[in-house]
Structure formats: structure tokens, C-alpha cells
Length: 307
Image (cartoon, rainbow, N blue to C red):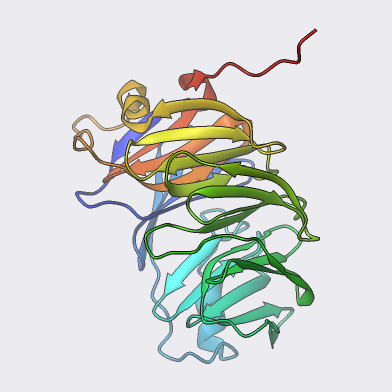
């Protein structure tokens, strides 16, 4: 399976993969417009405009009606992330648990109709967040390099990851389902930690991170760089680099879904990245979306113990 489709003349900033019997790729053209495609074939399924309610009262009926519209085409699995003006929303698979980042440093968790502010240490800004869509673990990285962990609304602790957060680099956090593996980067150093805040693996990267995504159970970590346009795959358990390929080469070898389409411009870098099971990745290169697999990438020699 490898296909590509030219969607926009502008760079696409976000992709999501919705799990299910028929997994769906959500392509965000802008904050208020998302398109859904069958991830196996690239078949267009639906386009939806995401119009936020006029009121910010999250207990009002209008807000609940807005949340109900965030389900995927099957209405069973919800979009993982929705960005509004001044508020970011992270949703569980069934949409019943929701994490809100309001402004720079306020976090709220809503479940079973009740909303509670998460008690964090004083911070200026959270620079990266993620929500475990299965069990509700929350990981929030602040601008001092500290990781705030919660199991739903229960605070697990604040852990200094010794990361260097700077405006020039792109920090990111990704949680595997169940919360057993948490991946954190400041843009040049990559960490694997757990729910206790213990660093299991640490890796200094020779490039600057552009986008980062992990497969649902954390078996694979996909990272793009900011300059060369390379996508690299790592084993989630030990951060061992296993495969890599120039994104433009993956696009060139993928089946073109449309009769007429343009290739990405020379020098374009990956602007959005998502990872799924069985070595599947989805990425955006300028306005082109490509879904590919590990089999289309170059395998790297793996270290073996000396006999």
C-alpha cells in the first residue's frame, strides 16, 4: 500500500489516523476544514467544516453539540486533536474524555460531563502535549524542559527531562496506547520515558526534528527532519534506527490517486506526519499527502553482538 494525492497548493500542517475496522486518514486543510480518506486506497470519504460555538462555555448545549461533530465518518472514533482560537482539544477514542489546553498554561480534563483543572506546577507555557486515547494518560512538556504526567485527573508528578527548549527547535511529545511508553524531544535530543518519569533511553540526534509520531502501541517511532526531507523510523523499545528514506522518493514511488496532480516542489520538507500499525506512515509534503509503508523505505544494518 502506497498512494499519494495532491490536495492543496499550500503546506498541510496536520494529519491524523483514526483507528477502526476501516482506518481513516484525516487531513486538515485548515483549522476549520478537514477531509477524510480511506487509508488503504486513498478514496475520498467526507469533507467537514469544524465551526466552533460562539460561546466558550464548555457546559453549554452548543458546546456539546460541537463536540459530537468531532467523530470520524463512522461516528465511533473521534478526531484526536482539534485546534481552535485560544484552545486546543485532545480527545479519547470515544470522545468521552477530553483534554483542553486553554491559553499557554491552563489544562482542563473533562470526563463523564465533569470538568476539572489539572494542578500543575507554575509554568509559563506548555510547548507540547499528548493524550493517551485509550486510558487517558496526559503528558505535558513545559518550556523549562519538565514533563508533567497525569493519569486522567490524578497527578503522577513533574520530572525534569534536562531538555533544552529553544524557539529555534520544535519540541514534541507522543504517548503509546496505555501510557507505557512516552517519547519526548526538544528538537535534537530524543527520550523514551515511562509513567514514573524514569528515562529508559536517550538519543542525541544529528539533525533537527521536524515532526514526530509514534504508532498506536509504540512499536515504531517516525521522525522527519527540518532540512534534508528524510523520514526515519526507530524501534520504540530502544530507539534503534531501522529505516529511512527521502520523503520525496516515497511520494514518487506511490500510486497517484488523481488523474492530474502535481509533485511537491523541490526542497519541500515534511509539514505533517502520522504513524499507524504494521509500519504504515502518512505524511504531507507541501500540499501533497502520501501514505506509505516501511517496505518502501531503506532498511539499515542492525548491530549484532560479537560471538
